[in-house]
Image (cartoon, rainbow, N blue to C red; front, side, top):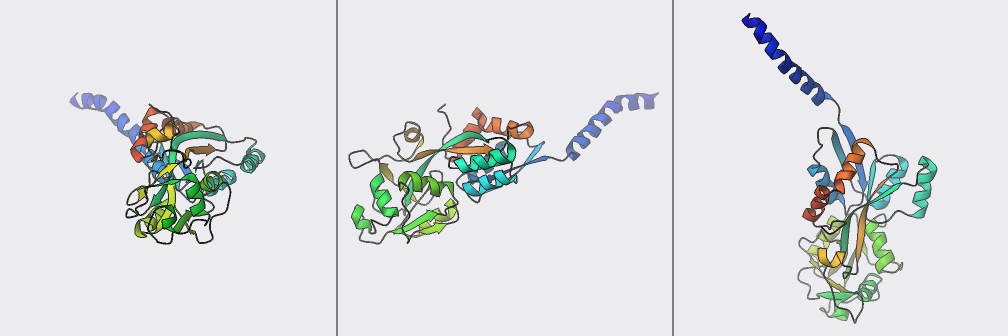
Length: 282
């Protein structure tokens, strides 16, 4: 009798253990996210903070926005992270392969900062001066109020969305100076600038450790503005942009759940924690 009672009471408990073991044994769905080096830190933090870890695992890699969009077109990534808008020819390739133009989702805002060494006495530049520096017209810091030292340029590689945005928006499609050193990632660029007193580079505002972000003025008659949440959202900082997710098809299943969470209040809170700016002021 005692045995019978024991077995009857234990049976639901045994079932719970069995179902739990089966659930744990089920394979997780892998979601791959590839693209912008600027966004790697942010995307990694999103995947770490995402609450539905039991059903999903993530693979996050950089390589540049262009690389991510190519992977999306080729079908080797679920999500492309891009720091530039998708191009018309890339949309055409998606449409030809998938019968769908792709889905663009604005996931964060970013200020593109102009970085110099912390010892550099220069505190601000105009947009025109930035353009002239990176195209090679201005070559010495004394020309912009600094020391009599040559300016050493650091840029991103041409597969980078940051590179393309900077060239189109800041350089007005003019070529970088031949002397510019092109770095594989933003972190590498910032590291180089932090070690070189005469250097200048550009990158996402979240990568400000051990370097100085200059205040930037639209023109000689405007006030110079530093990049922060307020100045980027109100448009007073002149070099701002959206950061994007691109998908080759309408999201469904765990991909949709993740994307929905990224643009929710919880996901946008992570944006602020990393040092970027939510799509909407809250």
